[in-house]
Image 1 (cartoon, helix red, strand yellow):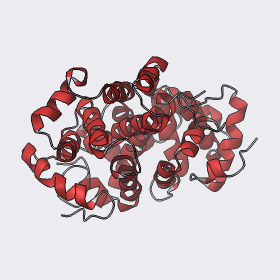
Image 2 (cartoon, chains in turn green, yellow; image 1 turned 60 degrees about the vertical axis):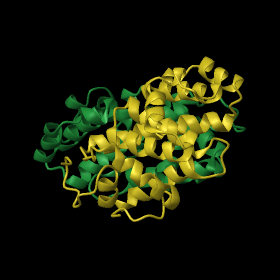
Image 3 (tube, one colour; image 1 turned 60 degrees about the horizontal axis):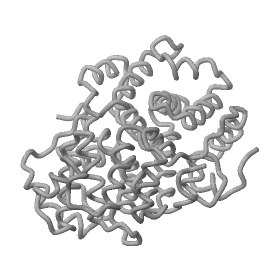
Image 4 (cartoon, one colour; image 1 turned 90 degrees about the vertical axis):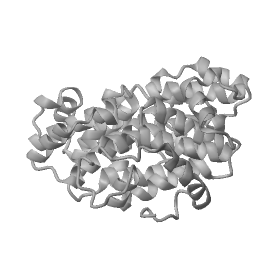
Length: 186
Length: 183
């Protein structure tokens, strides 16, 4: 049960978004651009960054939700998602993504923890300014989403089999108000 | 200078916003609804104060001065008052409700999981509504994003705090959506 009366039974952030649709609008739009844009980073890479930051923030709902969405994009490769979540340096991913995940991990601690050398390392692996920008903003945005979910004690399903249906819905239809205004997947 | 080539010399968040207008739009819409929309039982001054406090805790010079300046503008107080609230809200002359909400905001700054049911109950016992508690948590969470965006990209910030005080009336009048990033 969330700390506040949200007047709905939606899981996780959906319950909070439905409680306050005015703020749900820009939050959904932000997620759509940051996580589904295909220019530069792929949607899978973007979701992996989100998953890693949510794991570092110890947000069970978010790291499982976004891990599952990444999994959809990666054709069900849950193993790589789990490695990125827990130990990205040893995951079978590109050196560029490893360097960007390092930047994201710094952002999770504090904006000030990001050093010029972290940026240089990403650039040396071929990351563009736009990709670095998006990595920083995805990481920062999940420092918002994770706090929103856990700070209000959002309903967090512990049954992991409930996450894939919502993940497939997002992968198919994107983020936005439909995730609480249309029927919930089972 | 900023960690990446933003293609402009704008201070603080305006630099990356001009670099990537697609994300600037929802970021500004969120700020407008959370901080300036008058369909809210928390005043603009109270909401800007929450933003300034969280930005202070995150040690983000640009954001704490922009939003401290706006809080000062709306509350009609001086910079000493804003600084006193940021440094020790429990000892500041504030309503008990706002003090309880600032405790929640401070917990959110640490982690969403740091917020306890007791923190929520305390705010409620001082008269805070569910919507006010919601908005406090989301404002604090949003500043954990804005602050990281500003400092994570290494943007520059004017050092003279009067700069922010001088600009506050313009932002208060224009709001966060329909303004020229270059002015």
